[in-house]
Amino acid sequence: MKKTLGTLMVAGAVVLLTAAFGFAEFASSGVREFPYFQFGCLVVGGLIVISLKLKHDRMYVTEAAGAFALYTALLALFTDPVVTMIRGLVG
Image (cartoon, rainbow, N blue to C red):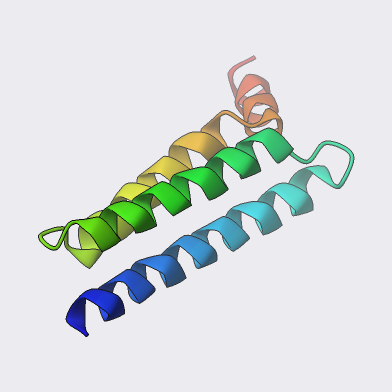
């Protein structure tokens, strides 16, 4: 039961972070420039983290959720709206 509950908590964190990424990118760029490839990579990465949590008993919920949060932040850095904003700040 404890293993299932931990996996469900990681799955909830993955869904919330993916939804936040999707909403932020849609709000900043709209439908025309939505980063579908990065969104797909985020979904696949979330499925991998959930399957790793399900397979390994010694992986903590905070480790899995934290790793996925860092992956989401790294992926968001390489989207077009963020790169454009950083280019505007630097130049």
